[in-house]
Length: 486
RNA sequence: GGCGAGGUAGCCAAACCUGGUUAAGGCAGGGGGCCGCAAGCCCUCAAUUGCUGGUUCAAAUCCAGCCCUCGCCUCCA
View 1 (cartoon, rainbow, N blue to C red):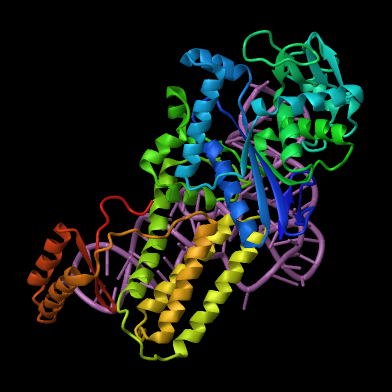
View 2: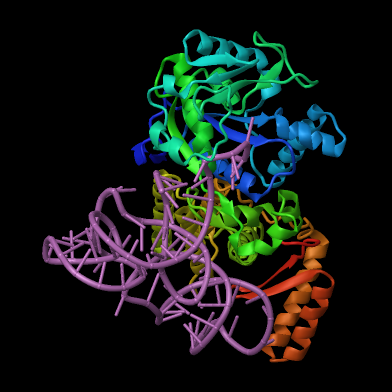
């Protein structure tokens, strides 16, 4: 398996610190408002990475943080008339809801800045002791000049950055790019420190918490490309200056951003679509499909049209899954042997697809290719069950079970749910009755009495019973109450 | 100004690092079929890979130049 490491700019063989174990830390968000697609895109990308790593047999420990204190939160809290911590909690919970609604698995732990102040202070103290940081007017700054490799991640050099820097130079800083580890703050949401009351700077939290919760052995650190500089650059500097070890992180992964350039109108009106707004109109499956048919490193230029298209694409996969389920659920009594000639070929295809999927995902988690494999798999399944000499015997049935399992498994790695939950009324007296009516309709069709046949179909349709004429004969199902599989 | 990403069919999007029969997959569209209609599905058609030159037996892929687009450099994922 290879992953693209932002630190080296190359795909590298993936070898975690500890065999069969992966420790990953993903930058969460400042919980100051509802999340939008950009936030959630990363969450979905790393969710799939995590699922795939697990599929590969790794035990994955996944940590994500909430930045729950900074000036933005204080400002927003004032706007909403809440205490800063209340505001942070509100949006942290909202974010967790969003993730659940998107079928994103919860991290093993959500760490919060406010829960880790002692660790952060300890880290800053050490940095000061070692001459990597200095105190000025109650705040503490990291000295970028004290860290030789500053710029290694973003590929920048200190000298070059000063020239075009737009950063306003704070008089108390020794170097314009020095950044705050501790910020002096006199008012209420603050903590005592050796330098007086205040709170942590933005970058230090991730260093302190990732080192703490992952025992200093980070295999993967993820986040958006927009965090490379300065956030992750600073994380590296302070972490390595603190531990004296390099590298701080084995593999830096960065997902592309979601841009709204095609949707300028919405920008002027308010800005982006929040996740919950999108979820009103689209299912988790659809949003995930949209995100995952693009490579995680590529930026996405958001398009409503494309998102709608993913609904149609996804429907194809759902149809196949449903067809298989129908075949497997019904005709439970069939047990005669069937011909084998077609099946060998089909078995080979299943095997091939399983392997192709692995190859795609092993290559820097290429979900776009993985998705293509899933489509090819679905196509082959469709061909198989709709071919003229298809017959449902014992062998075929077993084979279809495996096909369904594979389809479900691959979809599950993508976090897609292909289980179409229909009402469970498709057996018993009711089913016998419908079967009977359907049979009558078949007779009408044989007599070319299409008027009657169509009327039966239309009337059943009105009762919520859908008939499909397949090459294997008619099939029917109860229509699930409203939307298509979310 | 600095750093970075990218330009592939009408649209979205892989493959580029590791040159070579896959220019993948999806949406929309054409043609045919299961099958009369509906719903689906299958087969098939559709691309001189931004432009120009170069390297090579071979270039979407490597090199050079040019033209465009976008992101970051602002405590944004």
